[in-house]
Length: 266
Length: 282
Image (cartoon, rainbow over all chains, first blue to last red; front, side, top):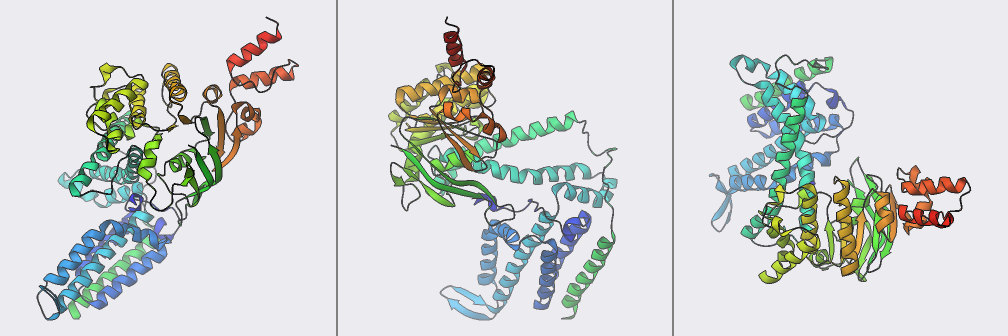
């Protein structure tokens, strides 16, 4: 149940995507997300699907791992799809009491659903093929120019990577705490909303406490190793672009051009 | 009143690349009132095994019978089972959440649907049984020392009046005095209330001293099952799976090799002392 959240969980296999520079993957994910918001035609979604399928194949991560992340957003997905389905004006197709489904609504909700699903799968591919450490490195390097305007890029990326790193740990911890409280007769499933919220207290208090404890321990361990931010910090493995990364960038360009072309021309 | 496991099998990460057997065809029966020690290397499946005993996880194969009833059968009341088979996890931090010790211990009995007076009575009784002084009862559980926290955690489960008490390494991280005290209290519970105890531990000395029966796990399989005397005779096999016998067993075996006529089933220092004194005719 709770272990199903895949975001931030690295899947260790060796593939082209795994070996790719994290910056390339970050940029690719960004391009993909932008393209999803540009797409408003079936053909554009076809191109996006092809891009996604290619990425999935290249990652060599089992597809069901990416789908698992969808469960977490299922609720949002349902809400946005049904809102679009029932609340868009236009040519009425079906009338169900006070609800009506329009042609435009159907189109919008399909696109919205696809868009969300692709968003989650696309970003899952990145996190499944990139370790949190690589991800931070990539982010820090590609956003380095913001340092000029006094944005603490290093600190932000460090925080991000710590947050990502802690997701699986906290998930596991939640599982343990749930079990410990269930052993004392806790019931997390039945009851109305208020009872359910109340039954969360025995779960959340130990979880928060352990998160704070881990945070202070980590801070201590970092200080013990003289961590003082990014200033003057060198890297053992500095990021370097390869041939395949340049190839990927050319591919991104072509992909984005195709999506933009469809939007402008069709 | 017995717990019986039949061909219990559990697989971690089923259907993924990281699939792994945590338990393989484990069977045993624990009659009422037995003190069972469960030992095994880290990752040998001990923790997975005990989580089956109160139905927290579902096996991939095999089943558990409590009092002759299959606990995984349709409509079986698992919450009631959990009040009879109490499980105390290794880290008290995973269960303490209330503002003070007393209300934390009340959580279990309250979940059983008892009335307020009964809940309080149970909590008082449980706290006394684990030997926690009354001056701590109004304190926040987070201000206590490691040993005291453990006591509160054990009391939290005891307050549900279980017939079987399972403890996952209740002495990990405690100083020698604290651990002796906790183990003595567990022994008291075993003797006075006739509870069955299943104790997971890494200390062979403790096992030799307290357990009536030892079960040894390795790679998800039960490899030995018997009295500590019997099990520790296999000290070489135990070593090959990353465990050991109590230190005194080694001394006894060395002495036997030198020709001293000692019983090879000696597992505690006291036994060894008696036997040696007897040999010397003192």
